Each structure stands twice: as C-alpha cells, then as structure tokens.
Image (tube, rainbow, N blue to C red; front, side, top):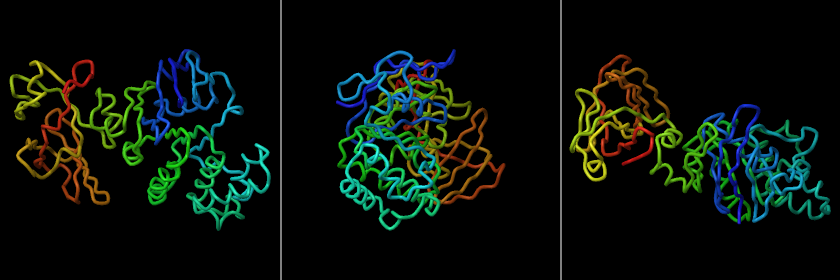
Length: 354
C-alpha cells in the first residue's frame, strides 16, 4: 500500500486551490507532480504531508487514514527548493538533527550520518557550516537530512530549481540512484517536462488545481488524453491550430493541407484542434512526411546544440525546435517542414480523438 488521496479538495475562502482529486501514488520510482507555478503542486504536497488539512476527502497512507494526523506524528520528510539548513549547525549536526529528535543513540546517529554523507559525497564537509558550502552542497545537505530519517514518504518540492545548470544535471542523475533501494514513496514536484522525462516513474499533470492525467511518465508524454495535458507536458509551448478534415484531407490554412490515414482518416469530417510539438517542425525537410509551411521569422534563439525559431504564417504563430545551430534573420521568410503524421487531434471539448 502507498499514499492515496480520496476525493480530496482544498478551499481557502471562496477560492478552490485543489479541485476534487482522487490519486493513488506508486510505491516505487518517482511520482512526479508536473505543472506550472500555481498549478497546485505545493498544496498537494502539503496535504500529503499533513501540513494542510483537506477541506473535504481523505488522505490514506499504507492502508491507514491519516487525515487530521499532524505532520509531527507522520514519518514524512520534505525538501524545498530553498536551501533550508540550520545556519549555526555543522553539516554533520544538520543531517543528524531528525535523529536527535527521535532520541537515537550517539553511535547509531554517527553511523547513519556517515553512511548518507558518503552516499551524497558530503564526508569532507561534515564539520563545515552551511555558509561555507556551495549551493549544490547545501541542497545535498538538505537531501541528506531528509534521507537519513528513512521516512516512508519523501516529498521533494522543486529541489533543484535554485541550482545552476551543471549542478541540476548532476543531482538529477544522482536522485534515482539515491532512492533505488529505499522502501519509501517519493513525490517530486517540477515545472519542467524534461525533468519529468529524465526521472521517469509516474507523472501527474496538473492544471489550475486539477490532475488532468496520471500514469507512466512516457505514456503521459506520448499519449496525452487531452489538450491541457499535452500543453502541460511540453517544454517549449506546443503548437495548436484549428483545422478542417474532409475525407482523407486536412486543411490548416488556405494554402496548407495534407493527406491523413489510419485513425486520423477515420475521424468524422468536421473541425478539430491539432497539437504538434515544436521538434516535429524543422527548417529542413528530412522525409516524405513533411508538409511545407512558409513563415516569417519572429525570434531565433540558439542554445547549446538546438535552435528555437518562432515564426508566423497567416494566423499561425508557431515554434520550430531543431537540432543544430541554424541562423535566420528576423523578418526573413523561410520554409519550415512539419511532420503532419505527428499531429494530435482534439475535439471541441479538448479531448484527444486521434
């Protein structure tokens, strides 16, 4: 058994922060809460931890109703994006603090602190104060304090958000290994779809206090059930537009159409909304499944080994994301090539139909 939310809501005054939510988390791997700022991730975590009580509904953990049980009486550890450490304690005492509260003996405290410090590469820093550490070392200290408790529930609220790129990459790689052999439920909140994909596990996509879909992370990414989930799970905003389907043809604008087959061809004729991820639109044609769109370059961003090009065509304001560095002049009209077979089709209610 793991953590379960049963018909949980959270209201503050007249505002609903969490709409009715029922969710059963996995007791292995990461459970990721993915959504923009103010989508409800932190509120859900606070309900799971017992820091907040639901307005309606129940929270169950390991087969027990823990609704109303204060956080002090739960075996929960939480790590925030801020580096929350005791400034006057050494790294050793910061990590040991929850064990001291639990009144463990000195020998066991030392053994457990040394073990987790070694795992997180903090052994050389154990006698330093937090002010003497780098940002990554401070966050590893906070993680160590959470892990040393052997909590049944570990909540990580955007723990890497305030770290620089290199440190984020380093800790992202370490985190799955840290929890691989631990018997605990892990919940990880992030605003970054790429982070969810890197960590794997299961993902709950959140939008304005609602869980739009929950399942294996790769499945949610590849097969979103609705447009909201597809938009939540797109690092660069997903391109959307209204299209008209007639027979085996789909018309996007007055000068752009393509043939469809399979499930897309079986759709009843009519109007749909399509969604296509930016990396399925390229400034270069690479196969026959490419529909040409001539667009005016609005913004060209080069980062690392990728090029992000924002362009307009009639009513479209779309984004192309491609590998390699491609230079374009602002205002230049150029050809982009869309993999039309990669389009997702949604009905008027935003539900995916193909």
